[in-house]
Length: 254
Image (tube, rainbow, N blue to C red; front, side, top):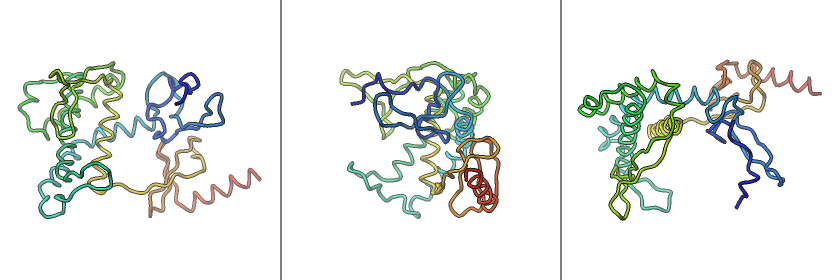
């Protein structure tokens, strides 16, 4: 086990860690090994600009995600959603159950954080349909974005994979401490799960050259695309322009 005394300082690193597009490899003190950490921040514990934009976009798309999952359930009998998930050592579960679990999780997370952060009519939300409730909740979260990401820890109830409460041996409903930033990242994870179930994931290749505009290693190219894009500043180049830029960089090094 790694001695915590030699772990790198992550207090001013993007909390997405190795998943941060601007992650870096830093040496582990006293060893020859390195570890991937998130981008360096000016303040403690947060997200880099690129990751915050990613999370914000994911949260805004949650109402559409919920609608898409509802559509998948509605066509379950005809599109194979009755099949079972495989590839793990655990007992396979029907895909329909997995989709329903994601829908419940999105509704629960949005409702919890909207109620914790912003003005939120709990009674009206309780009697609303889940889809409408998510639209309203996402509106609350986006209007109170900075307050949400900087929110302290809340005791959040724990749910099992089937949507039932997690109860301890003494009969108490278990909770977990989660801060606002952790809640936002959880909603990003659920958004990514929706993309996977809907078949909207795509192969993305990270380019080795830095972005000429913002000088970060955040250039990507989607599979089959003729465009190279920076995930940080959003600037785009044609594939040919990118290749020419690489030649210029190579010649300058030579």
